[in-house]
Length: 272
Image 1: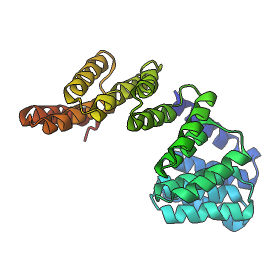
Image 2 (image 1 turned 45 degrees about the horizontal axis):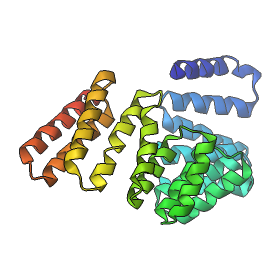
Image 3 (image 1 turned 180 degrees about the horizontal axis):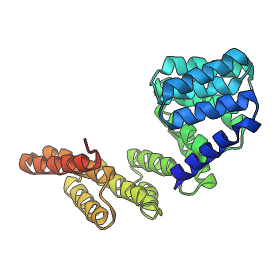
């Protein structure tokens, strides 16, 4: 598995760290500490790197990542990414990470500027393009969003975020045939979780149309298909959406049953 390969790589790095430079050994130790979930030690090692090598932009970038995704300290994350870019204004990974930090603070304009800079400095990838498309959508620039998301699909025909975002935009526009085409493509994906996601979002079309009975049937079909493959978080969401629709139809007993089903699945997926 990916986790085993990663652990093997770390173990080998530690084993042969004697052949590495002092800087490399500190990075190896920091990576191992992070993998062992000893985040404070990883942070201390990265700060040691910065003390010893003030121009080490990678350490600032890594600190920013930890502040963002492990500690939830977005202000500190932004500060570290900016420090990396003060050292090297062409350092594309910091622009990428800074874009997501701004995104998570709802600073969409700065996020867009950073993702544009990242795309300019590196090869375009679907992940960056669909982020840019999502940002355009949040800013209400839907025509530009559609164009960028289509570009992302040219890079990766199964870019999940692009397919979902385009499906949502077309649904909001009332172009249900296009929306269905993009949501249906998810259902043909090789990953069962993504197939389940497609079966969830395709019910968004009749919901948007106010056809709640039809939406409930679509959700029921999706749940039946999930049962044949794997019950997961997207199955729980289907039951939650069913509960919401039953409430709209004032069928409160059925809403309660659907809600109980969602809770039951989540309890199995999230053991104490």
